[in-house]
Image (cartoon, rainbow, N blue to C red; front, side, top):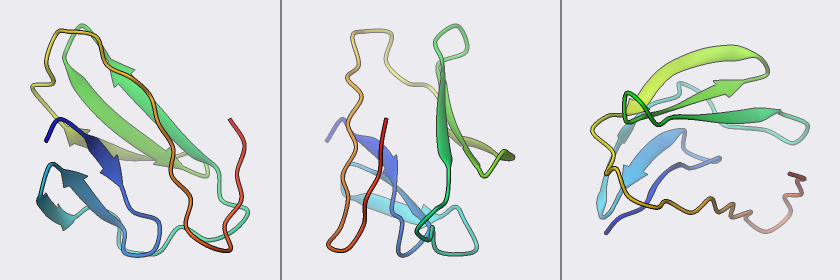
Length: 79
């Protein structure tokens, strides 16, 4: 229930079991995704190919958070 992220094939953002539209397109192979955690303002935002997509999540907890990345079949990536 305490996860936040975006889905590459729908462009939706997810938190727990809830989702809503965030991107207007799929994230395709070769795309650079940047995730920015603003600890001071408790926000999480994303940039796609250096284009800022704005704040995706607000009011994040002020406790330890862990980064994770999940790729679907046929996808590849690097950190």
